[in-house]
Image (cartoon, rainbow over all chains, first blue to last red; front, side, top):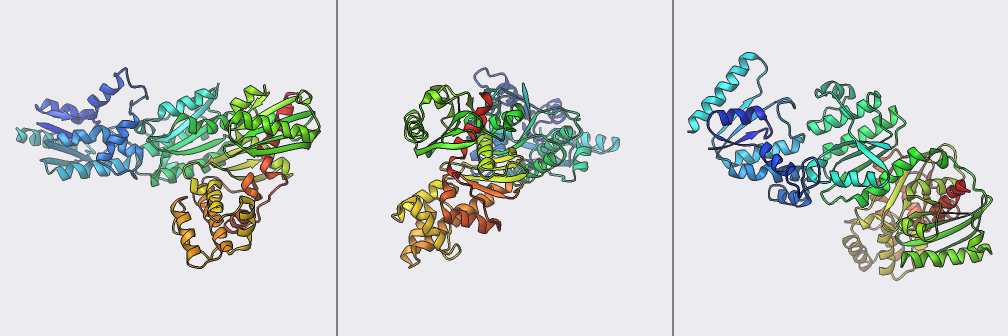
Length: 144
Length: 405
């Protein structure tokens, strides 16, 4: 199944989804495509004015351009999602979209999809880490 | 090369980083990002404002690196997404923080995905000028025979100066950049009883500065923020100490905070015609008045009598027309139009800088008495309007280019 992960650029979540046999809907691949596309040249993300306008599908014109630009990237990933894993209260080193308003809207859009969703807090100690991985494993196995 | 430290949030995802860098490169500067530790919570805690967005936390950490001098830069460009409330709070507080703790010139901007390098060019050029030409900007006295040409969006002005005095001046509406400049230069020379060969140095400024600079072989081609500042403090005889220069132009407005005539923070409008001289021009036409008459009429009206529902050039003026139909007199309607422009400038622009006194109001619109009254009313001060206030750009150009004789 296609599993949307939040934060969408978390390498740990991406890896876990792949390990348990699902397709992660993550930002890394999308950004990789853009960074390596020779036709685009607005570093470092290669977002174009047209991308930001694509974001209008998810957020209105009065929403800051940075929010719409982000949603232009992972809005289509949310559209594809058949399941989702949302991690709350994570440090920026775990994965970071840098914008709180984007975070709020992304979580809302995932919840609106009504797909099977696992929501959990970022672990603070070793015991919580084990529980964190176990819950993700159980959720992903149940999706099969 | 001048290093401009960029403190920003949302720029990558708005697709405008290339434009920011292009603007900096055009004026011989380089955009740099202060190095910070990946764990920037300590910097945020020390700053005292803890935004939710990590991008803004990173901005704070980068500003702190500049204050602590762990990263060296010559100037600072602060930018966040237009319409982001959290972003605008941090943008302003960081500007204050940097101005309090460093001597770095700072400029702010709120961008959209449509922001282009051309819009940022004047701001970047001003930052570079402040850093590179501090000695030239320190000039307080004009020497020799020099000419300043200000090619503005609405009008073109030329001033000839000799030994610190204006001896010839002329202005006309801008039609074609070169032709308008040639016409005003010819008239200014006639008034000064001189020939172009007598001019020892020429300085150009304004939107058409590059074109006319090349045409007249100018020794100084400079953006209007620094040139106008010099012209304004020279004409107002406030070359020492603090001041704020407010120039409500035909196309955009400039609010510049200066210390000893050198700007250290400034803001340029340009997002809405309703906050520019163009709004008043359109209102004057609708009232069947010349713009000068309009200013005098507005001064006789009550600034607060006619209610205005919109600042927009279309809807705001529609409101004024409706007020006329309801029986309000022309004086009060003209005064309301002036208040509308003053209010918008106060709400949108003057919030971006620390307003220092005296407030020197300059540019063509400073001749509109009603507008000066409206600005004074909202800022609770009496703006200082120097003689020849519409010529500040040209005077600044003539003054500064005398440094090249």
